[in-house]
Image 1 (cartoon, one colour):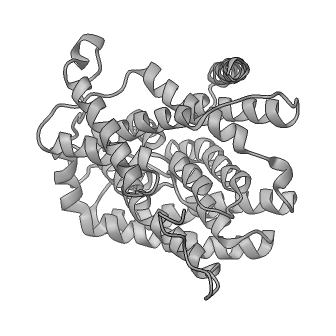
Image 2 (cartoon, one colour):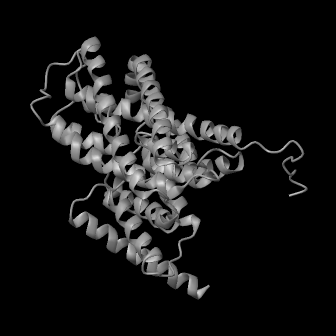
Image 3 (cartoon, helix red, strand yellow):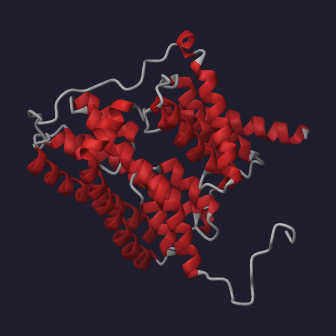
Length: 368
């Protein structure tokens, strides 16, 4: 027990160091990617005997789940309802394109299709990594690599595109913006924070009991969103809590990654870069449809559909002066859609590709 605590302490200290270095150099998602990089290097190259139990990851997922659910307010719901047909259409078209890209890349890189597909989902970095761990046979290293490459390309390319002369701010038919979460202050978090915390934990445990996909993420999302919709005021997480949530997930993921298990490395790298590039170009092409049909400014429509996360696109939208509420709605809708529908679909596809022999049946609970 004492040795495990020392190994855990060494892992957390290393993760803090990695996050601090990434933050110092203004890397994207420093408190997620930093711990992933340091713990992966430490455990694989330096052969350090790190230890990170699953409950550390679950703490991070609980906090991320709250942050996602807390954004689901009445104002957001009204905007989503107004744009729902287009959100659904654009999301489905983007995912269909991801299915196509994954098929092509799996043939080129000679990697399992479901692995490439899980790594090709736009946004949803943490969710897809956790899901990849839950589905037997998916190469977690390839999935993580694809998402990291996509993230880096988004951080480098999308700001250059949005702030270029190609995008000029215009008058939108959809006007106005709103602040959907109260700014956090330590004293103002109470007593609502206690209610949200209890509900998030209970929903996570219930989600695990009923075998909800990624229960420690999806359970708090559903519970927190329900509290917001009945009128309970939510708050954005303090920055330190957001950083802790990313560090907890990053530590756990970093120890799972085994780069030596990644065959055809050069082809995987090329496919990951092409995957990110084509996703960005396809999103830009779709965004022009919103510009033509709804008169939405080009930078707003592009950020609505860009294959990044809600947080990264929100920051860029704020700096550019785009319609932040609309960007938030589109990005949030896609995240929820992926979170709700992709896990069961991926598991169904896995069962279809790897059916049980006719003479094998699952063990009952008593037999198990």
